[in-house]
Image 1: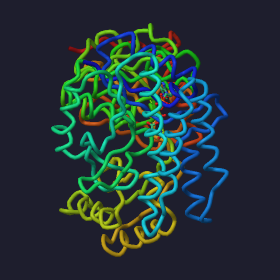
Image 2: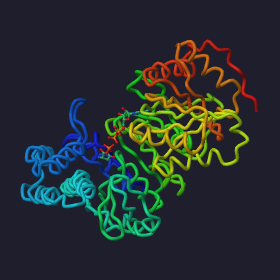
Image 3: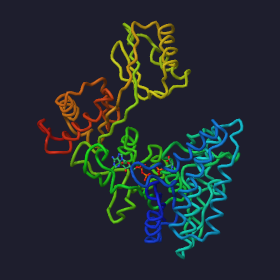
Image 4: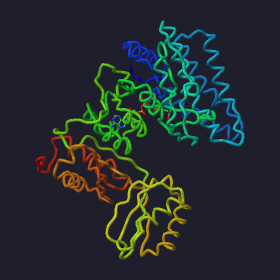
Length: 462
Ligand SMILES: Nc1ncnc2c1ncn2[C@@H]1O[C@H](COP(=O)(O)OP(=O)(O)O)[C@@H](O)[C@H]1O
Ligand SMILES: N[C@@H](CC(=O)OP(=O)(O)O)C(=O)O
């Protein structure tokens, strides 16, 4: 049995949905289909999820949002007309959509926004199931609440609860094709909560783990995962096979093609994942597995992500002060801030954070606490940083990867703010100014993936 997830661009209009259904029908093993909400039809278009967010925000601010509501309905009506679904059925689907949108924000705006956002995936699943039936397939829409996709109560950032897996297992016994909306689940008390953005990938992975699928297929709009974001470099090297660990690191730092939280359920259950293209299903795609041969090249991929900042703290004899690191991180914990990395020297330590958790008010509070409570010599904050990451299982066995990377960055005149090699040795992170991030990625790509390397190639050590 396979679980196949289709992303927003794969469902953007009637023509795309026809392709999706053709792919589903082409393999009898594709028994569970997870759908996103319709995405962009062209680069300047708006995803249905973003239309829904605009609707929810305006309802919250102004009480009504008629034109935003109509924009959502129009997208679905256009799709259903294009698929030639019976008028009565289309009216029923639209009526259910309108019912979800009519919910009152009351005093829990987060819950209202989540319920509205989920309507995109929910409506899409209903109409895809209807279209599959129109094609003669036995197909049913399954609601995450009825199926037992239980999640935590964190609006817009749900986490699956362990008991969900047992409940969802029974999907395996269903006859015909199950069409399941991605992106949301319910708390055990019945409150709808969405995953973070891009979270339909997570739904697919959870279902694949729960039903012990042979394969989790993730259909998107590119032939494969590439060694670098194809929006930065044209026609980059395709990755055929990548490990869960490599993909997790790359997804963390900018490979938006697969949600970083989506790997864990499949990984724990040992389910292989394949990223494929709805517009070119014959292409082999990228397989994510637990282990792979690494003799060809040390680096599998290069990713970058902006929006980081760094708190630099120095204090003479910091290395002798027992508990210094804990007390520093405790200040962040008490302020509700998660941190990303902590590169350190003998008498200094930097804490790298996502800027979105560190506005100016928080910054002044945290800096004051660090000075008052830790009596440091110096504390400063640097903003507008990017993290550029090179990732590869083969790096562990290769000499000189760091030298090659830093030489390439130096040649491109990129100043390094920070270097961090994770203890797993699967990745190396370079902190650079956000304005230099693309230049850094290009320089590293040329070094590790093209014949333009200027550095002597060292041999593998063991
Ligand atoms: N390294 C990469 N390899 C492939 N695609 C990437 C990579 N990094 C970023 N992307 C982007 O991810 C997009 C697919 O992800 P997404 O838009 O979330 O798809 P979907 O709507 O199918 O879920 C691609 O169109 C591409 O622009
Ligand atoms: N529709 C949701 C969830 C999702 O996974 O979408 P996509 O498959 O288009 O990335 C979002 O836009 O966040």
